Image (cartoon, rainbow, N blue to C red; front, side, top):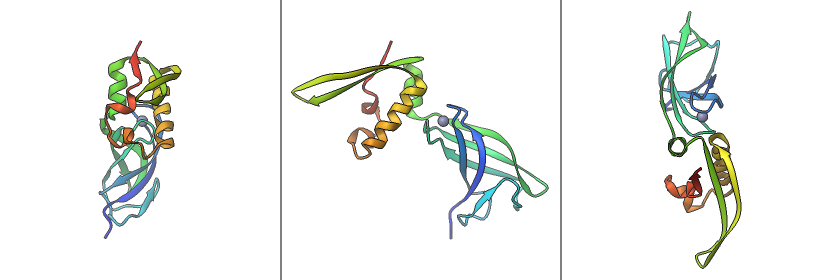
Length: 151
Ligand SMILES: [Zn+2]
């Protein structure tokens, strides 16, 4: 028994503009099947959801079905902004990200970057990929963005 199915449809992330391609849905057979635009389904509308791989926001959509076939039309039902998007929104349009190296006995400023919010998330994603086991990223909390300051 599966738990959901996949629907492949292009949707622009309402938060960051990233092109989303894959959603999950419980509106169909729930057998881990893959559906795409044009496929015949036994539903009037498809409720589907995903989290944006770029900004990590959670997006809920309803995909339109016409004549029993999946269309590329959809409505955005709800958007839950990720913590990093929320934090950056509080800080403002631009942030300074400062990277340090060292130990508790002394930190050295390596580089300071003046970034817009999009760039700040991109840098965060690179760091997250480079240090996937770092405790900074295990707690989905403030430490990962400690270096961000308002300017
Ligand atoms: Zn996004």
